[in-house]
Image (cartoon, rainbow, N blue to C red; front, side, top):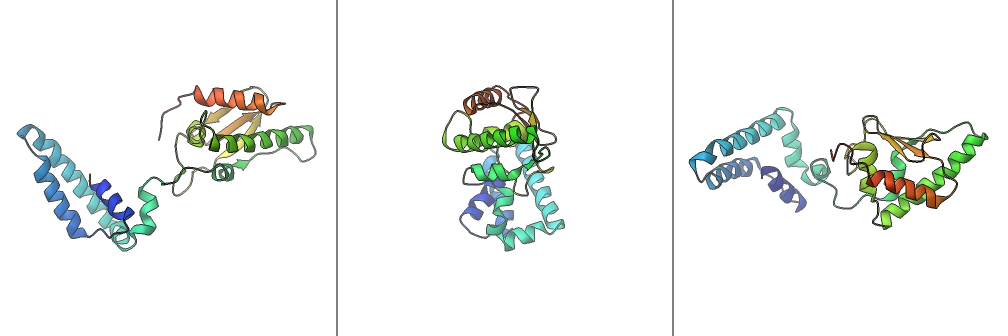
Length: 199
């Protein structure tokens, strides 16, 4: 509840004052405790919120939040706009073969398919850009401070389906001769791999 209150106040461009936070916690505790059985649960939540505030104060983060609420909003809230294809494309460090080799030519064609696939995912509904993010990273949005480690895009010939390593943020995409085959196999793999869920 407290975090949502901050988010609402930050979204409106308002400042969150420490006295407001303290009074909010007191009111929240009084309103929510309606029976003896729930009292312990709500007191623990209030205590956890208090400890969180104390931690933010000790590190100087709370002062900065109060001073620059609009600028720091993106660190604590999910982005309001959806992910764009260009953003996903620019996330990756692409591991390529030596220029001029036969493999480099195949990688160039597959990279063009990948760029088309991202554009399609931005417009179509079979697989979204968020689904692609979850597939290779476990996150459904791009973190405010970026991914660590930086995602890498690699090419594979041993499978017709993409392979992901969510711990290392590695996406390996397969070679195909036609975009329709590439798209079909990418869609199938991403839609049928629940992974670890959303992080």
